[in-house]
Image (cartoon, rainbow, N blue to C red; front, side, top):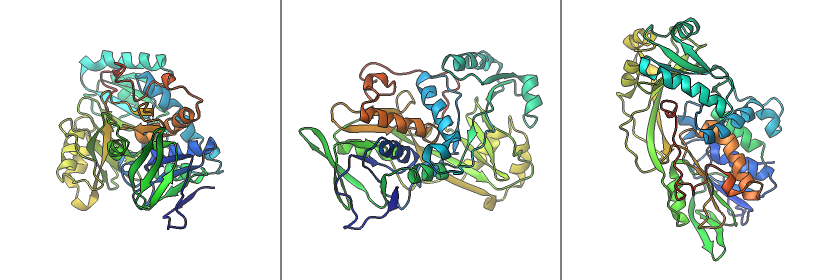
Amino acid sequence: MSRIFVPDAAEMPRTADAVVVGGGIVGVATAFWLSRAGLDTVLVEMRDGLSTLTTPNSIECFRAQFTEPAMAELALPSIAIFENLAEVIGIPGYDVSLRHQGYLFVTDDPATVPDMKASVEQHRRVGVTDSEFLDHDELLRRFPYLSERAVAATFRQNDGWLSSHEATQGFAKGSSARFLLQTRATSIGLDGQGVCGVETDRGTISTRTVVNAAGPFAGVVCGMAGVELPLEPVRRQKAFISPRPQIPQDAPLTIDVIQDVYWRPETGGAYIAWVDPDEPAGDPREDLPLDWDYPAIVLDKLVRLNPFWDEIAATLKGEEIHPSAGQYVYTPDDQPLIGPVPEVAGFYVNCGYWAGVMLSPEAGRRIARLVTGEMKPEENALRPTRYAEGIVYEGGSFLRGRH
């Protein structure tokens, strides 16, 4: 049975088979699968609780609509795990508020229609068999809230969203790992064999296996082991709009692929967001500044394909807008780094995510398979050595968007 606690000196573990650094959903899912593989697993999290930094600042969605094979290989089994999480974690009736309301990628540019059709064909090649191409008439028939200017879309009904907090807690509760809160990793111990421990501000844990799942701080943790990987934290903002009757609560996550702006319904209101292409990479931070004009920019962009937002924007009050910000972490090909770092034996990474919530279940399981030898590093398409091997993946022309 797991334990989530702030350790005192007497309770601080001195040894572990594996130590995971980072208590977001990626780290917790990793700890779950490592413990299920029979490893005595400890996770260290610097903050007061699990899933309190990057994970809650996502819009908590999942999708299988990937054109990239390596991403689809993570997404499809991850969705299956989410759908059956109560059984997977062994807690009957455990509920993560999973909703299959779909992902809708919409365009109003006729020039992008061939790409959309091609993406659905590519979905089939990577194992996604239930995505659809929707032409103008079918699109407006199914989703009448859209503007007449929308010309086409791709859609998958079985995409959707869930409670990332409950999913994280489920992985924690279903594991036998120990989760140490308010415990900051300060260095990685190394000897002639590789990793030999993790030093924290509460003491040292001896181990031969460390998994870096530190989200935006993954680059810092890599530095503790003398490793440098191409990881760029970038601020991403969102806002929750308080309930309004004009917001269709049965709508899917709706993405304007031309403007990279999107929204989804939530408890009578909606989450809204925009991927600002000019947002620079920065240092990892726990407290991020908010741009108070950001919600207005997003609303202005949303109106083009979702005209009901115009009436809402005209009457919104400040207290009805709830902005927040987190950091995504990008790699050169926008795909995560998963697996051992060969120059430091025993040091593994599970990082580089802009889609950590949706990919975390299978990514965590993959780490466990790599640690136990069930999977060979060369069988893992997302190995961190791929750039040195000259492998930089390319995504689809519009579904590579970071939603």
